[in-house]
Length: 420
Image (tube, rainbow, N blue to C red; front, top):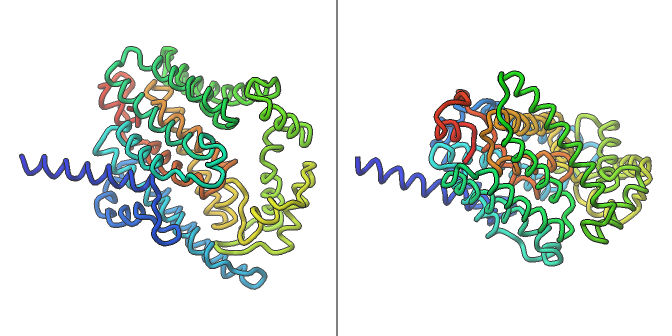
């Protein structure tokens, strides 16, 4: 008995340390991180746990297929495009590391509560914050926001266990403070994500409907409406100047330019759409954009009245590799249709978790925020900057094969749904 307890404590400590390393993203050779190596070594331990979760194995296999397809597309594109060796190596490792990270998070769910997983991963994210570049200009927006939010909402999970009766109110208070912090530091998208998370947490205070089917339908419709309300409300706050004069001026200019805040803030979507129309199968991992590709992308951006002849487009988006500022678009351009399907699978996993967990009133604010954040990143954020937090999201959002009933044991239900 004593040996078994010692072994479990050692296993939990090892899982906790690995989560910290994955969050830190300490690299010793390009994108190969210490956390990725540790996750690969632990494969015999986490592999048996994956089959207990719906879609976990197919999702990881789809990721492996995407890597293989990326290399196949590279050979296909080599006749008309040049190769960037760094991009080839870095993006291949990045996607494999993403899959390994998901597996470790799933394994950790068998060893510790979700709030402890968030605490470990959040500590790693905080320790890994860069203090250079854009993070030096706006530390909250480009550095500390996500780590602090993950840590704060993880502690909310602990508080929810200790003070179950006032769980939702504690989370709402913390989310309000975090949203205010983001609004004051010119982080428009993060302000909207925290606002939507807050509304979803508050939604759980409404009693469950009489039938499960009716509750699921109400939750789906409510989620769709809340997304629209959050977008319209956030846009109004920006235009009216409640989030600062700089954010107001930038938002008004973007709306006047393209007719939409999203298109104005993310003109890369127009470039991605134009490239998809001309080259639907993708380009391949490591492939450099050709002059023709850049011209196609610029034409697409010009359609929405964006002026694409600038250093951002020519150096950042199409310098030595494709950077379309969207996880879905980046996965497609690098890994073809399987990469796009992987992005769709991530959306499916996160949306399904939100619907099921909210319906059963078991959703924690931590995983809710991570899901909302990852849904945004799938469409509007670069692959490299999104992949670390997205691995935590997917690992916590895959649902177990056997779900307890809403009226089941609170501790069992919470653990199964990925709550606190």
